[in-house]
Amino acid sequence: MLATHPEVGTAGEPWLLLPFLYTRRRRGVYAEYAHRTVYRGIEEFCDGLPGGTSDYMREIREMALHLYRARAGESARFFVDKTPRYHVIASEIVKLFPDGRFIFLWRSPLAVISSLIETWGKGRWNIYHYEFDLYDGLSSLIEARELAGTHGCSLQFRDVVDKTSGAMARVFRYLGLEFDADRTSGFAGVQLPGGMWDPTGTRLYQELSQAPRERWKTTLASPLRKWWCRRYLRWIGKDRLAVMGYDLDQLLSDLAAIPTRYRTLFSDMFRMLLGPAIRTFEPWIMRDKFSRLTQGERLYLMR
Image (cartoon, rainbow, N blue to C red; front, side, top):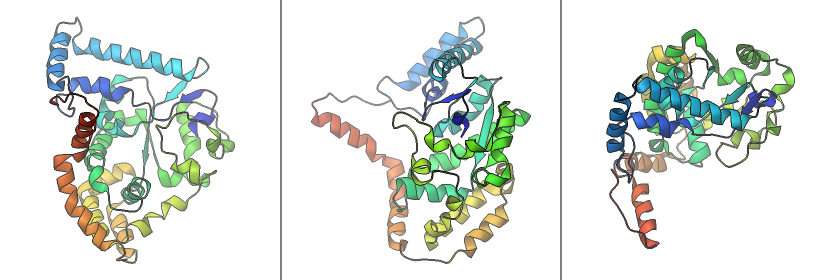
């Protein structure tokens, strides 16, 4: 919807800032080049710069702005970089772009879990793949929202899909851009080249629809899924949910109110037991190594 405005450029999911900002994180990357050694080298290099790490971060900002400008075109005032795992560097992004605009789009945690199951699990329990996003990611987003303060803009998904809420008009005002109602129906015509984006919305809907708001009630009807969601909601807690615009007691009540269904019970039980082993041993790393071995490549340690 933002990209329907001629002064807004965007791409599917750039993922541009993650590798550069992770150069200043000691943990979280396994690579053939030994990431922890890279971290030490860059920190020592920054120590010798006139402005220290501030000089290094300034150059990352200038590089990003240059690339955003090149991708957006000269007529654009804004480039929208919407990348899922920016949650983990959200606070750094707020600090990196003091003149930036930061839009926090919050969705009910129950709907988020349902969407992950339906979109990437084809209805099967797969949340062990996304616990990094649901726990560390959410905590980081809350911290970034509080850091942004009045410089940020928050809205709820439920309001975005409701044409009468005025949510998108408020976002356009926040950006200082002209808004007209056609922008809430023309988003399906925005072309995002490449495959780095989630096509679910534009594939299923050609205009705003409130149908996704209720789909979670079917997806999360299993007793084990409801149990897991109760624990997760309580972990988030009242205060953080309030920042997102949601109420803990209301969400727990909504979850308890849906009829329990047992169709996925045994599959859920198996997958919930399997999840800790998958998180611990990360079989996709071994799969990648095996694939490379079968292609005649030499294998090296990942550090």
